[in-house]
Length: 474
Image (cartoon, rainbow, N blue to C red; front, side, top):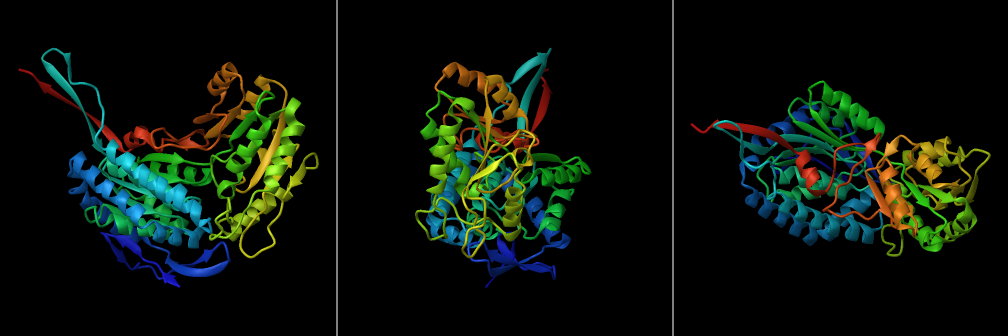
């Protein structure tokens, strides 16, 4: 059984806390390790190391930071098997998908951010007052605190550290309590190329995370998590006037018009909805279907749902594995069990009959706009179907939730696609596709989905501060 330690100053360090908790493999429900519940002394030590490292990493020229990050990307690929094994113990995800969607993609994203380190932009030097010259400096914030979730542990850690490192910041990161191992290995790999104290990891539950975001040391705190967690982080950060970056929940509307390729849309949306067991803030969880193709679409959806394969980490044909933990399994089951009388279970709807925290691919039809299953994030392999008649009604229903992260529109009408992409109040609108992401384009939402961007040059800018320098020309 693995006995985990914090990673501070480029080395593993035992926590000073006497409290610990078990790590459970969601594919078997068996205990596989033990993690410390880090205390304030541990968090303070990590921040002290990060603060010291601002004198090294924070002062490096961009080209030097780029070279170090490119070496880290190579190391991620070279140690793919170890990263996959570490993560699958904590998540139960199919190993082939961790390798392809988090390790390979993650290395590519680190390479993108390595390049982004060298393209900081600002206003051109100029004279805006007689005999006075002005320039803009875009500087690292300094030390940042970060908290990552359990749904994509390695990828979310890379989304956090990539732009922070590119901008010249040093880091204290707390991974989810249930999925720390791939993040620890990532930090260990990074230690070969980054100065001591640049990337520190402290382990623990929510109380430890509260210490990380509540510290007076970081100039910015960033979290990917639930709306509730984001509100708590924003409140804690406000005490110190600390900047926040919040990527929170989602409830993506996928709007299928009657001129769409119905079968292709149903196939793509079941894949996007069930991928990673639906534990994805951008998941195609909420399907809005025009009345004329409703029956045809639901029939196709049910066909693809029933053929969706889920399985153990070693199942090379599985689209998804178990839910992350027993509490999440119970929440998903409770949500489905609360299905109102006017709706129906088309397929699935229950825990799978096998060890671990598996849930069947589920399709629910006949939902109304104000139903809890439509308004609240389920975070499981559950798709809900609603019916609409007009384009205006589709817009109102699509926007009629607290979230604003992602959405998709399915139509052959180009003008309609343009109108819908303008009208939908979401940070991303996909047209005739759902869920692809690229390092070059921003990811982030509106409303209760938070604020700030991951990926792209915009995320690097999140981790900088702007300074005006004015000098006399006389």
